[in-house]
Image (cartoon, rainbow, N blue to C red):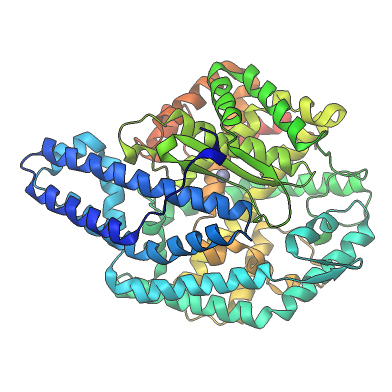
Length: 558
Ligand code: ZN
């Protein structure tokens, strides 16, 4: 069914409460593992129904934020979600303590049970007031950032509209745009500091309430870190410091030469070519057509997937007024349909977004008939492998988008991917430091950030900037306020995607088949086991990054 024709019905909280209570009763009455699993299947159905209503409201709200009907619906879900999450945890506790647990583990898997354990360990109705306060603080931060009104070139711009000037070919334009951006951040510095200070104290209070020493362990539980801990993550970050940081320095030196500058500063971030970075050719519709050709040729599986997306109009990719910023993929379970939301703006980022979100959507499409819902609940380090690897698997078709600048794009994309790794790890290490030291003042946090900059990005030159040069860069990174500890997932996934990149250069078909295997495994096993099954080495193993980088360097033109 076409997305526009899908009927919408609100998922009512009172109804949901009734349903949960009925399920809990039925579950208690069940006299065998088989019977309990039958009840659990009803839970899947109820969940899918709710997720479907929520996804439709979410998408229709984002497509037109001025639509009052869907705005109200969206707000409604935001309000009822903490309560619903609490009911869900109640149900999960019962499942976890079932007398037929062994049977249920066989049925839905060990990983699912581990995730339930983490869910129970990180939720408690006592936390609801603190969690509500946390949500309000996050909303306050997002409003502050979204509310930017920057006067530039006679226009009033928000931060995402200012972006095109931040990446302008004309260095003077960039300089002015960056200056305006710093002025904006300086004007809200006090609020940014206060909100984060409150967030750290709030999250620490939640952790203490549950008996944790600090927020780190609770944050890991909330991210469903079911097979690795902070020491393993540190082994990974240390490898990035040792092997990626020097390579990225070489990439920046190459950029400096290409741009003909005496020195690079922060206003040159993301600029690779004097004539401008490559841009995709054609209108968004033409790009979708090109995407269709690409996925038809790539494999039978991607052909079926892309045709399904097109036939059912499951893309909304054009940037326009009254549309929410950003890009994402979301599932509509009752229709077994993935949906891709984006804001094309004419830069190479449009192609990245398409291939990236198509990676997520393709995986969801591949796993859509899995009978065990838990196997579709993918943790984010795994999910980002599907998307980031797809960015590389589609490289051979980039000529459809970039014409004679295809090679420029491929090099830029690879370099950008490598440049990202130290930054991502820095964001992660920073969060460990701030949550392990909740008593830090805002000034101490900024000092900690600057120390990390020196380790992870030694060549970064903020040119005396009064906000970003004083350790404020992380305050523009929304994940740090919105999704604690999420960021490392992109880095872990990137190392896996780079392994696919290295092997596809040797044997494309074999690499693709292993990728397909990973997509089909979905969330049926632990991350560390699944990547092994797909023939990848673990990012947590010392030595992995050195090996990966040696292979990748072959395709890199420095
Ligand atoms: Zn993603």
